[in-house]
Length: 229
Ligand code: ADE
Image 1: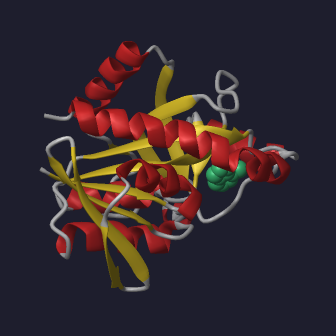
Image 2: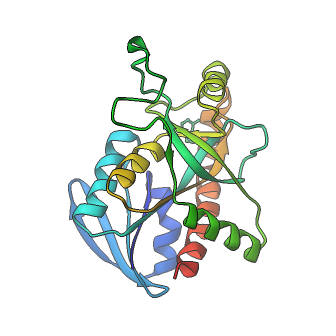
């Protein structure tokens, strides 16, 4: 199977590329795409750059131009749930854009006509992730991820996202990747390791824990690829 692995930032895919060792590089649409074989699969690995626009472009490119049959996202997130601490992993059951707002027309946050307020991730991939977590003895939580084009470092905004979106974690790419994969009928899986708590200390903690948390997520994604039949 041709499996895409994407992150948003170089730090999020560096551990995966390091693990692969050798790969071919193709430059396209302002990104670099790295191809190799691993675990009986053809992999295409890339980072999109931060935010919903770049991640949308990248997910669509992975599917349309490179023929990805599945998209696995690896990266970091801010915790919304009090159950999530720095370095913990969360897999999204569904994703919502917290900054998508046409409530003026009576629609709920995160919804536009002909879209979905919450996009559900692939249940089979979530089940595989739980098997992997058990096998390698790590804890894996699941929950709702809220995505927006904002780095959240504000307890008030974080509280709003928790209340309105029922989110457990937040980041800046997952829901846009989810929308692309959902409409293109490509199974997807969004994994995040916590880098900060989206609070006053968020930017400081993000800088400090980006690499270590990205590594946690990347290592898990490699195990996922090995497990996918
Ligand atoms: N990704 C990691 N931490 C984040 C935060 N606090 N806000 C948005 N995206 C994030």
